[in-house]
Length: 459
Image (cartoon, rainbow, N blue to C red):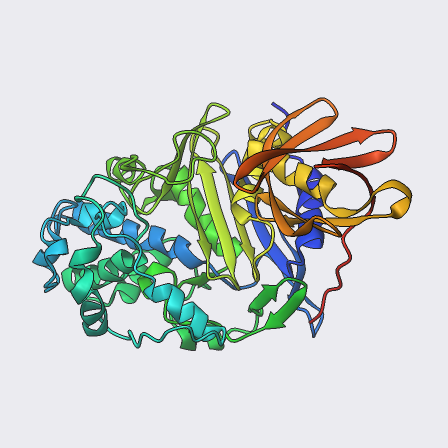
């Protein structure tokens, strides 16, 4: 197997930053149990033209959940609690919805309670988008918030996965109750210190005293706006770290719970964290599932991939590792653009000696990029424009309408098939690659691509 090619990976990252207007990305790549590549791309601060590095701080979002789950696992390992303890043993939650919910169910998002939206509202408020207001600043506030949840239960505990941020807020409180230390203090003492993660922070005061912090940017279309950091995500997504520190964290997982010869968590306990307990609602790679604070992909080119992503929109992050390859990746960004999860899996493919183009989602991303642009019909009589919107294309044009959704429907040599709905009926749409470049066949029209979409970034 050829070794990891840093230049190929760097070219990929740089191209995705350029395409999606991401201000910066910081990365760390682990191969054969060692960091073989780490660097920053782009700007941690656009207005000051300050470059990002592997030491620059970013919010890690829901990667925080891995620290919370590891903390619970360590408390179980020391006999202070059990994964199958009822949540109400530790917290005075009144709703019947929590009657049969165990710590296990909160860790694996299988409580049967759907996402309740409290952290999303916090983010909206931080962005100045006050759709609703929830003053949740304590356990008491959270208990009041969930008091009416009984009518919203979707399944019995253990039956189905619903990603529940609020469940991890409650797990943080359980760590505090069981350990006798605030959950932040427990994470610091039992995880950060042993792993020498000296610039991984859980409180605003600590972050504010550090000079190497990536400015969070809100990206809306072509407008990139610096905003204040949205604090308050706590045990569901509040940690701030850097690629260098997180490489120690991922190395510990790769080594089966050890770091620099010292054991942080037992192999058997770690195995329980990595066991699938619920099916992930989006199946990107086959068998995607969730353990205790860890996402599990059982077969990725023959390797089991473990990790977690994180997003508070102005910060996005991803960590992945494969123990059998002794390989891993950390990616951090100060905005939302190209998916960090897909970029991380591209890195894991390279580490496995495979081409990222073999990943279905990567192929789709690249195809959509080739099709995006301005189109003209015969003698430029009719204009149309195709733009990317997530995993779809949006078609707008004279005589055909605006924002027509084109859904991917397969490829063959020289052709890319899509479909849309017209009057409730399916209508096939075809893109063709030939000597003229890219052509679009839509209803009665044949168009040719004349250039990229017209966009201008504003800051």
